[in-house]
Image (cartoon, rainbow, N blue to C red; front, side, top):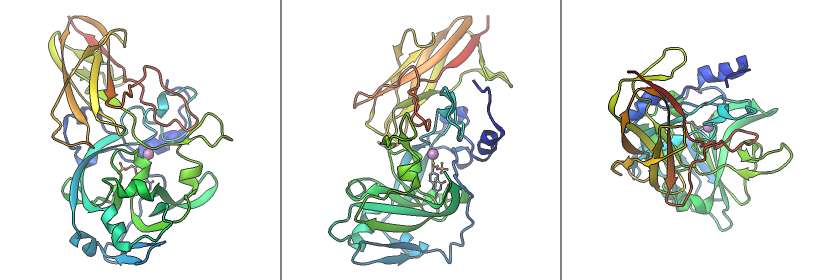
Length: 352
Ligand SMILES: Nc1nc2c(c(=O)[nH]1)N[C@H]1C(S)=C(S)[C@@H](COP(=O)(O)O)O[C@H]1N2
Ligand SMILES: [Mo]
């Protein structure tokens, strides 16, 4: 599987770390264990000099300090964020980019001010169609020099729980997660949640910059437009039970009743069902879903008591959401390696 991993992929993998799967045990991921994805460099931002500009097709352009944003109405929401490239390294042929296996996910409690109320304050003019979010980080991608920037339809934002976050798990945003301010769009793959936010611009036409037009499209061929990547597809992960082998990572478990635990989430609709297989997906049994206390936008815990008898097993879990989306057994291939939500497989040896 890892055959042919290049030094360039390793260089990305060493900068952009994933969630160690045992950290699925925490409802809210401790900050240093949350996955990290940075396209270019982490900018060092002086929070005193920093301003958020809100402009474009608005009646009242705004320029706000961090304190002014903090004085606005605030909300705190637990959000499970996942990179659209999660699962990419399991595709064949492997799309060359950050080589995630399964671990590009985390859940944090984000505090900030709702995007919709800030936009209302700026009074978008008739014809407002798209809203562009620009970060302070700059790089070259696909031969184009660019600021990291992405847009969302104005109508989508006004009806959403999207927020401009200045706190993560109760502390000011750390540099790597977008200090001093980032966008958080619950339910959408991570690329939408622009970090190191500096500017919001209301546009009368759809923005078609690199990260909208070229990147983050589901397509089979370079010359087809494809479909934009948007909401998080359902996924479930099992916390690997027992103890790992250091190098190869398969699990060693003692016989007896072992309660398997995991998390499941979907940006499309609520989680409706999680099933577990101990024979590589041949047969499935229902897991029990945990409480919904973290709210609609965060992962849900599940448990499954497993009567572990000596032998070799392959554990899998599979999530279904209320919209009828189910995780596939085999990964759907696309050029960029996006939204691969195929079921996880955990090899386990139960000792005698
Ligand atoms: N400005 C900026 N915002 C960004 C990115 C970036 O490189 N620059 N990466 C995006 C991607 S691809 C993901 S998956 C998430 C990752 O957020 P995290 O590092 O806080 O987990 O941030 C998004 N926002
Ligand atoms: Mo991402």
